[in-house]
Amino acid sequence: MLRYSSRFGPLGNFLFGASQADNLVNREASVVGWFRRGVMSWVDLIHLRRHSDDYLVNSYHRFWAFSLAIGLIGLSFWVMVNISTS
Image (cartoon, rainbow, N blue to C red):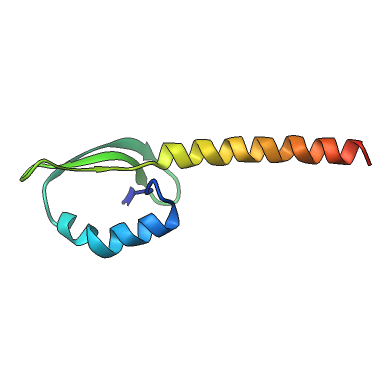
């Protein structure tokens, strides 16, 4: 399983699945990403290149993970400041 993340978030994921994902099914391609193991194995996709016509799909999973981490750190600082002043 490949884990794809659009640069436009969940709406971009939906639009990619609705319009472009069918073109990639049962086609030869090269994938670069991080292999993860858990109950089920998956690959966090960085980019996928289809061999037949050099079609390239980029994934922004690392961007969204980094953005979420920075947002949660900011939220934790905000909570700590507001709790300590109360």
